[in-house]
Amino acid sequence: MSKFKVLIADYTYSTLEPEKKVLETAGAEVITAQCRTEEDVIEAAHGVDGIICQYAPISKKVIDQLATCKIVARYGVGFDTIDVPAATEKGIMVTNVTDYSLDEVSNHAFALLMACARKVVQLNESVQNGRWDSKVAKPIYRLHGQTLGLIGFGNIPQRLALKAKAFGLEILAYDPFVSNDLAKELGVKLVDLQQLCALSDYISVHPPLNKHTKGMVSDEQFRAMKESAYIINTSRGAVIDEPALIRALEANEIAGAGLDVLETEPMAKDNPLLSMPNVIITPHSAYYSVESELELKQKTAQNVADALSGKEPAYLVNKDVVHA
Image (cartoon, rainbow, N blue to C red; front, side, top):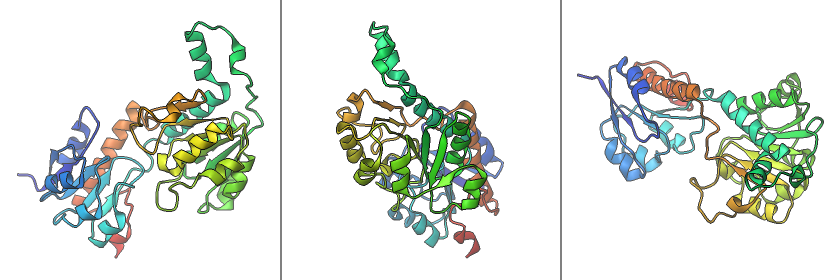
């Protein structure tokens, strides 16, 4: 008989065998659900020792009903679907996986930047529509010597900075939590947000979503940007004020956007962004590779296995819950 019961509250994967293999070594039985609401989670999580979740809402209402749960582990870097203060107050560990797709997301951000810079999608569509004419994409500017501004300068944008520098881009960053010494070591200049918006030819957005970052790129920031600037987002859709982005694009305040994330996913079919030829949209896929998905599943499950075995998980978000 299993010592523990772990709920995988929701998932989009074709198999859960990697998670089950890790959790079985800790003596845990895995049960699964596809929870969409708080009520779904409350019902499915009755009597569990741990929860793994992807998009299921782990709110205070849910946490208040968790009598036996020791850990909530999220698939991914972000944890905005979990009420961390409520979990901490109840003594429940919250974990994420901060390093599973650093290359994938930084590569995807740069791919979107390059697609915007070289107008790859526009040129491809022109050829597919029977027009063989390179002039349809004019103007295209040389990438070398232009400026990339990074909003947030954690692990992913640090990798992006190194890749972009190889293409001759100058790098600016805005992140109040990063030291000048680290920025200098990586050849990056720290500036404030408005300076970054005014000076950058490309802006890549990377902060986590929280009450401080929600809508942090809005009308004021778009008005400060160059008319030739592109904005790239592989972070969270709500970091950018989407109506403000649409206004900026419609008013030609910026040149275009490359977006892997939106405020609402999947996006509505009548979203104006879908009809804009200077906007490239991918379906929240920046994180994905065969290798990164396997790594994420194993590390998420290991967080739970460690917690149930009395160890501190490697990717603990609320360290106060352990050290209190």
